[in-house]
Length: 322
Image (cartoon, rainbow, N blue to C red; front, side):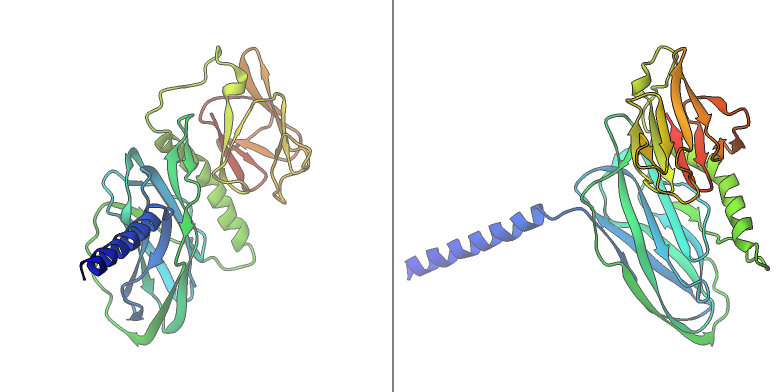
């Protein structure tokens, strides 16, 4: 009997060891969840972006797709101490949230609560289109944490056509991030107007995000700094979140795969711009595709690049020089 008890105990220990071993190797993950999925017209819909990670992070981003005929986004709030919201231009049908912290945070639970107002009776849903956790890389810039698993992406909602009285503002804690969608505009120029406003605003916003995410670093490019230390940090468009070190100068940028940096964007021409070094400084030359520095067009064809300059190629490819 004693041998049976010992053998049984060993089996339990081995099984527990296997379970804990699997848990220890489980990857970082992000998922979408809602406590309630049934609402009435006019009620506040709340969903949570959750995460689990053993790696301290200094920011996160998420994009949630919704039906603008059924829902209107209001705001997002993060309960994580020190996480600050970075307002971004919003597109109709897509919530775009971004948060950053000056100190590393270990996350295990709610990253942010996102609030919508239900507009009418409908069967609809929310879809977590993308999400990322940001860490500080060896160069001092924000970079996405690799091997993050996106778990549950879908939340199904049933909104009853019965209308209720407008609800008072619900208690919120932490950093509040406005998520106001662009106003509805009549006529066929809606896309152009919204796109123009977004591009005008995005330069300053991306510069602010760059300053917040470049945590703890007082390092700036000076005239004596070697050219190959500079980099381009993509903030919008293809390759968003990536950084390209300028190890080779001059550096050609464009849609042609033969370029030093290939931007696969329909509004970027084959050879769009060039970055080169001269007199221990950095210069950008527009090659005819339409290039903007901090929201201003490059009219002289060549401009000096400074740390933190926001460069836009075409309509949407945007990066920060640093």
